Image 1 (tube, rainbow, N blue to C red):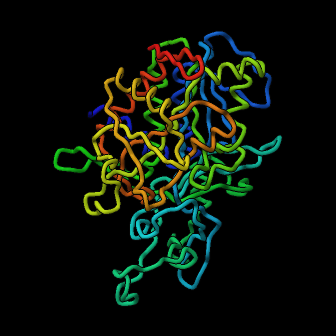
Image 2: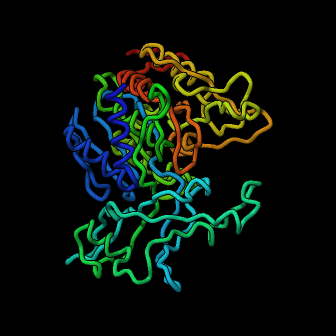
Image 3: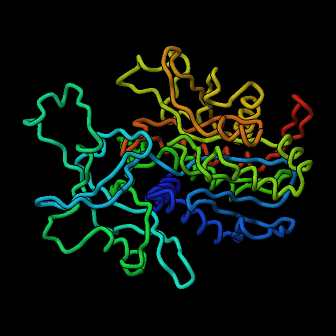
Length: 425
């Protein structure tokens, strides 16, 4: 458990933005002997070769050129946050002008140390170049309004992004501005910065909580905990008769409809180039399987009335398989059975999740990705509380179980004849 906590906490800390998350994954893959491919180049793949490619700076697909059927995990590395538009210079203060990204719980971002980071685009001799950047150990804060000025705050107060969620950066008399720190971290001159994609993120480090240190309190648990678990399983799996593929997408929190999101052609384009022909691609997809891994709502002990009575997963109870009659989740009987068998072989417990029948839940990237690549798919996740809060909560045990399951998944191949499927692993 200590090793899991150390590795997962380190990943959550370093993957502060989607661009940084892909940077961390790239470093890990390169250290394991993977070669980066560029979509603009011709690909010459060696049998048994290990490769990855990046699109949009914050989506990455890695694969080993071996086996036949594609065994894919799909996760996302973006989280609800606030994107920086620029600085606001007022009477006494310098503030940051922001807009909402995805669906954050606004109040959870108040009165807590926040940092800023992402990517910048700088001038070079031959054109432009994107680089990772952040403001280091400096922080900003979004101060809440005193109760004396908002007497109804504890009765359910709606926060306005354009006024209540503006971070305080410094006094107006300060000589330091945001781009000064950003440029310094990237090792460039401020005047060479042409544009940027910067966002707020929590400056608090992951911490164990609970009387037995059984819980992890951290930002970006949704969905970086699944990204980490799938990455660990991908790298540690034994060679099988399948082709292992790790897909991490950006922009799930805003619907995935971008050039690098799950609704894009990124996964299909990559698998097609690995296959070499339409016929081979169709056969390998039909022989494959995808795990769409995005976290699930755990039973909340303070609000049992919001959960399905029979299908409400608990923290520490194992990997969650997610179901929805209207196909917000892809799980159906065959994909459910296959994944359950993989988890049984791995020794990883599973739980079931349905929304309460009269409540509408969230969706994820599985069904969206299936409109581009028609893989048999199951939707899973780790149970968590405080989803979309600045700081979220999960159980460490579930992260360990996900690694076990993903290691077994990537060591498995399927023999498919219609709805008759043999699982080998």
